[in-house]
Image 1 (tube, rainbow, N blue to C red):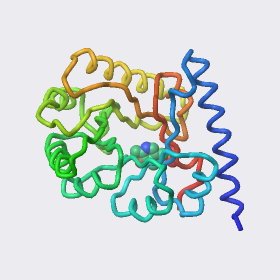
Image 2: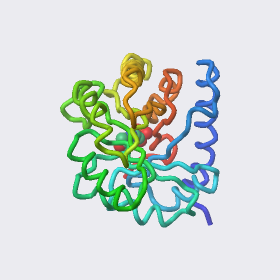
Image 3: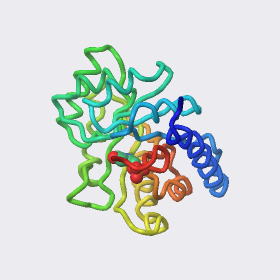
Image 4: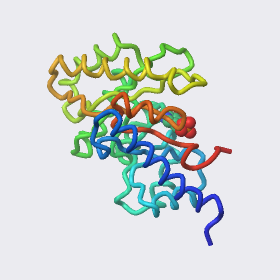
Length: 234
Ligand SMILES: *Cc1c(COP(=O)(O)O)cnc(C)c1O
């Protein structure tokens, strides 16, 4: 039998989908161009399964160690993205488990992922993690560092840089995130204009439970929602 919380996940999913669609339409975008990614860190298996059963297919996990059990929980048509800080010594495992690594922020990690992807004979899509608020407490890199990283893309033929991921500083009002979200989009356009081989800035992963509607208005193609979908974390 499903718990009350598991039933609630399906209802919340519907509500979030509606808000995403409304924000997309408001911005003159195709609602299908903004995808919902469910953030599963610390979420019990029943709730993850409930989201899948209600139609969600895109999931994100912060921890390599926690990912395997969760990935095994769902049928293979569920897609998993790595959204947490990735140590280079876990790159091989990450390339096995995830279809996209959203948190590339340094050359040493690019090298480790390149090796891992080449060993598996595949091309691994990655996003560059941008520390848009320049916060010491947050992962990701500065514009300068990411530009330097993007320019080196041809050195990593088994990686495909597909866009940016960012987590703007937390503000009480979602509207206050807008300038940061816009800055992420502008920076993505700037990298795209460089026309670097192996770099195609198609994805903007930004927006959480708090500000995903604003993020969609500002061009997010992936919003990463945890608590608003799965309920409070333990
Ligand atoms: C936890 C987390 C989220 C989701 O945050 P919520 O506030 O629970 O929606 C999104 N992105 C990253 C990188 C996270 O770690």
